[in-house]
Image 1: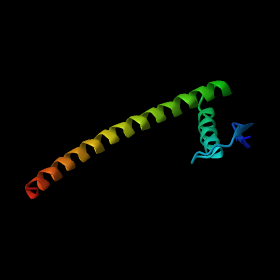
Image 2 (image 1 turned 90 degrees about the horizontal axis):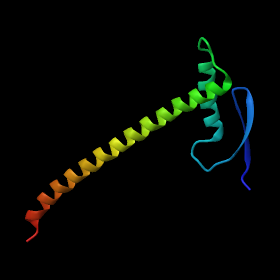
Image 3 (image 1 turned 180 degrees about the vertical axis):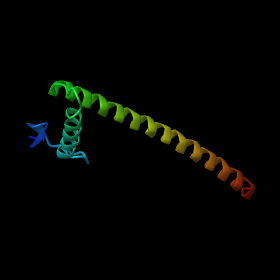
Image 4 (image 1 turned 180 degrees about the horizontal axis):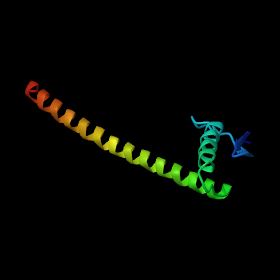
Length: 97
């Protein structure tokens, strides 16, 4: 059975399963708590549920932007590798009888 870890977000304790991820639940909780604390200080602060939804939307947008950049980077690297391979093949052809 997986171990449970106690985390605290926006003044409330939660027990979550420990994961094998390189990012700890504590680190994630700290990020979410920080974002909720920041939004709660804005004029006309919303309920904690509304804050949680806003944080989820902000984090979702950040995640999708990172995924998009990663895909673009992957395509660029693939294109560069293809050009490099073609260049190498042109150089190697004269060497083969």
